[in-house]
Length: 51
Ligand SMILES: [Zn+2]
Image (cartoon, rainbow, N blue to C red; front, side, top):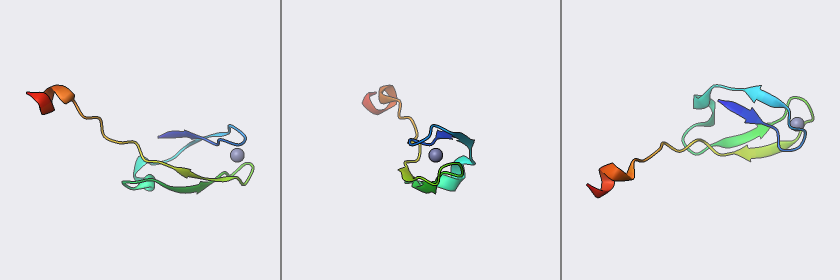
């Protein structure tokens, strides 16, 4: 997945599985800023839930 550093807006392409199920802390390779990157939640189709 594509992520962007919230501090310097540098973009990085990382394997989605690197974040695990809940996400993880990342450190920018450009500016050294650390932040928590949440994992992408699987989309739920409400039509299937409400049917
Ligand atoms: Zn950065």
